[in-house]
Structures are given as structure tokens and as C-alpha cells.
Image (cartoon, rainbow, N blue to C red; front, side, top):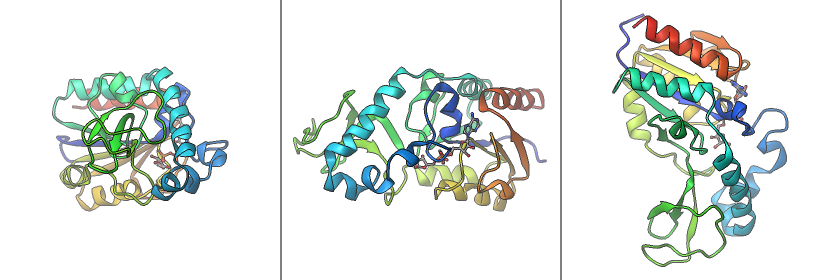
Length: 233
Ligand code: APR
């Protein structure tokens, strides 16, 4: 493997499972309880905003009460030990990476933020959002959760793809590899000549694309992997 200078880490719902937050596609997960087209698309919000707010209000309360686990803490430790070398990208909207002290790029938005659909102003959302809430900047009654819904473009894609195209190691932690563009990052990393590692409780849809696999609960395997990286530096 070439010298490790730049690391990109992508995380998904699996890293927060042991903090008590349900994943989407594991047995009994969020998408077994709700239909995506009812709660996680722009059309759903246009059709029934109260239902969509209710879905995110519940998740906002759960996330606010959750604590980061050893996996979030280990990634924050890695970033702090190697300043400027570790880009942490998350699909999670729960804020647990920040609570652990990490700096993170949120490609799917954040539960703790609100977005004005009219002027794109963003602000800290109240714990409960309701239909018709107005934007503090333009006064339009167009407040929505700052969440990237299905059919919308994830945030910060240019920054993320630039980082992947110049990284030496790409790691995906606790993500099922079913949602693009994140699921395609491993192929981008391989094309850039980076080493690739997947850390997951079990095989994912993208397992075949990774060179190395570490299997087990994130709270155990991520701290061990971080220790190995720091020792080998
Ligand atoms: N440790 C490690 N991995 C785990 C753990 C755990 N304790 N528990 C579950 N996992 C793994 C599962 O094996 C699965 O591969 O986490 C993954 C969770 O997959 P999903 O529920 O599909 O979550 P994610 O990949 O983050 O979903 C991507 O889909 O609906 C959208 O926008 C939503 O950001 C989300 C995106």
C-alpha cells in the first residue's frame, strides 16, 4: 500500500446503531416501518407536510437524546491525531459525530437544521417543526427539515469527490451500499488507486468492491481499526 497521507471515511446508519438509533434497511428498520415515498421525498412533503414533519420530529428527539458510541469517538480521535489528513463524510443526520468532537461533512443534511424551500436560508431547527413555519430570512412559510430527500442532490459532492480522487485510503463504515451517489464512492476510490476497506456488521451490497473487510459491531471494530492505523503511521 502507498504511504497514507489522505484518508476519506464514509459512515452510514450502522455506526449509530449501538447508540440506539435504528438503521434504515436492517430488520425492523425505518424503511420497514415507513414508506420512503410517504416521508422522504419532496413530493411527500408537498402532499402531506404534517406527516413528514412528524417523521423527522420523532427522529430529532431520538437523536438529541442519543450519545456517541466508541466508534464515533475513535473516528474523532483519528482526526485529532492526524489533523488535516482525515475527511469524515457521513450520510447520517443524527449529529453524533459532532457530539464526539469530530469535524464532519454532512452529505444528507442534518436533523438539527431547517432549510427554507423558498430562499435556501438555513438555521437551527426547533425540536419540533410544524407546517407553515416561516423562514427567519425571507418570511416565506416554507420551512422544511434540512434533509436531502430521495430525488434531491446530496450536499458537498464536489468537495467529497475531489477528496476521494486524491485519497490513499477509502473506508466505508456501517452503510448498506444501496444509496447512490455514496454507494459509488468505493469505485471512484479504486479508480484513484486508493486502498479500500469496509467495516460492517455483515456483508453489504458493495462488499465485492472493497479489498479489505472488517466484520463486527462498529463500537468494537472501529476503535481497533483506528488503533492499527495510528500504530502503522
Ligand atoms: N456495526 C456496524 N455496522 C452495522 C451495525 C453495527 N452495530 N448495525 C448495522 N450495521 C450495518 C448494516 O449491516 C447495514 O449494512 O449498517 C448498514 C445500515 O444500512 P442502511 O440502513 O441502509 O443505512 P445507510 O447505508 O446509512 O443508508 C443510506 O439511505 O434512506 C437513506 O438517507 C438515508 O442516509 C441514508 C441512506
